[in-house]
Length: 140
Image (cartoon, rainbow, N blue to C red):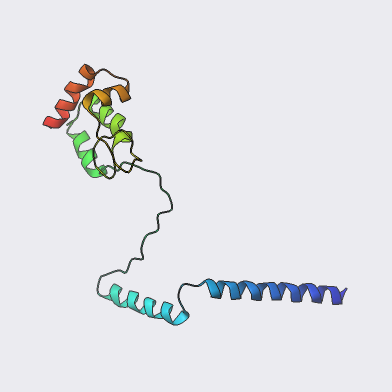
């Protein structure tokens, strides 16, 4: 039984050594390079700066961002009417991230802006229904 457990133990140790070798082979930077980067990061922090690695995009979901402080202030002073708030929320799915326009397809490489009539159709409303709201928002 001891002979069997010794073989299992050795096999586990060998497997772990192989894993460590693979990790070492897959490292982007050597230990010296990592030490140098850490030193540079510490020097930058001592001067009130930070070193930021390039951000890798993991989630490609599109979203529209809004400034919470501004929205809270506008809400507090009752700047928007309810119908304007509803329209702003309803048009969010059509904001083209690249163009900053209301567009037909937010995922298209070439984003084509929507006309007011097309926007009304996409929202399932009449042009005469949303036109005054849009004009009110433009004026504001």
